[in-house]
Amino acid sequence: MASGQATTQGSGDRAYWPATGENAIPPAGFKDGGKAWLRKSNGENLLVTIAASRKGHSGWEYKLKDKEGNAVNSGAWTSEDDLNVRMYSISACTHGRAAVESCPRGYPNFAAFLDSDESFMVYRRFGYLQSRLLLEKQDELRKLETTLDEWDERDGKQDPDKVNRRDLSEEDAAPRRALFVQIEEKFRDYASLLTVAQQLVSFNKPAASDYKSIINYMNQVAPVPKREAAWVRCREDLVTLRHRREHAWLDSGIEHLLKFLQQRMGAKKIIEYLFRSPETKQKCQGPGVYYDHERINNFASGIIIFAILTLLVVPIYVLYHLVADIGTSRSDAICIGVLLVFTLAFSAILSLFTRARRHEILGSAAAYEMALICTALLCLLITY
Image 1 (cartoon, rainbow, N blue to C red):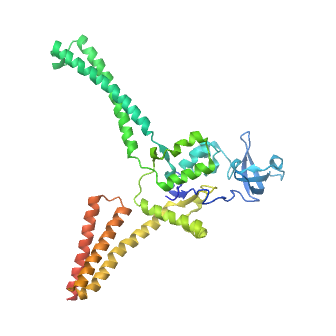
Image 2 (cartoon, rainbow, N blue to C red):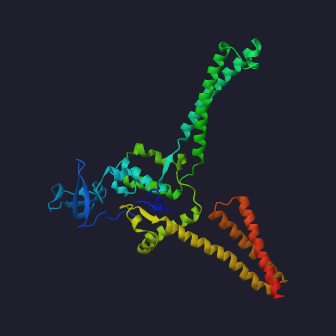
Image 3 (cartoon, one colour):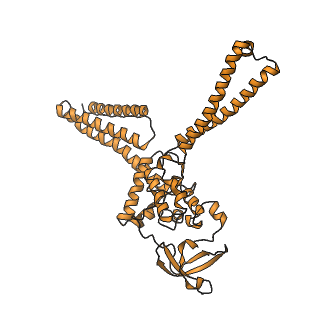
């Protein structure tokens, strides 16, 4: 996803959170004359009208009026953090699907941001602690294994029947039964922890653009103290809950292109019209930009279809016109070159745009090249 994507959980939207340098002064969240909800210190919500706005040191500030037209807070400037586009409620925050700004600054806002898009669902896997726990459990089992070996060796010398059969007296069987119960409990804990560790290792690493968006958000919003937010900097220990996508490379390229066109080429209105739905525009009132994933996916599918048609039509067209000169060294070299170039292009598209494995790419490339050769032979037969 582009510099960090955001979509409400399950909605399929996409977004990025630009760095300060990319969008140094984000647009005001509220316009003069507009309505907003003010969160008061007692937890109540007050509907206010924006009387004036200005850019402060830490963000936008507003002068407010109540419904009777009286100045709120004795006419003092109010931070944008204290305003909402809708009445604030705990349920609106905890049940998702609300704009990030709907939750108060701090962990509620931080959680809303991480949950706002699958690309932002990045957390630590605590690899070091996993290793420590696994080593601890492993050593506990080692000690129990050593104890069992010592018992077997002792009983094998003193009373071989104790290790040759299980039909023992209660007095002889009880210690071993208790030891095996203890071994089973420790082994279950160890196996469970080992399985979870394996699953965490199989999780994908966050994409560079997604990680950059999270860092941009943390630098600009700073929802929690630096000490408690330091885990975001442990990049090697981070995993994403996001599933690997079929066309991840292409989607990322498209989103970077949209970001460039929107910020550098002045095509903001066109990009928003084509790739942002009314729902995605309501996801965030700050600098974060949300794209509709369905529209991006359709655009990516169109690119892939165009590439496939190009790889089928162009080489056939070239080979057909080379048939007339067949037999000359020049035409033979061009035919081989055409087959080589387009087969490599076909393999590259399979590798970049799909999850095909190596043997699948090899087989598909061989079938594609055979199709081109058969087409060239057919053209030769028709010509002569």
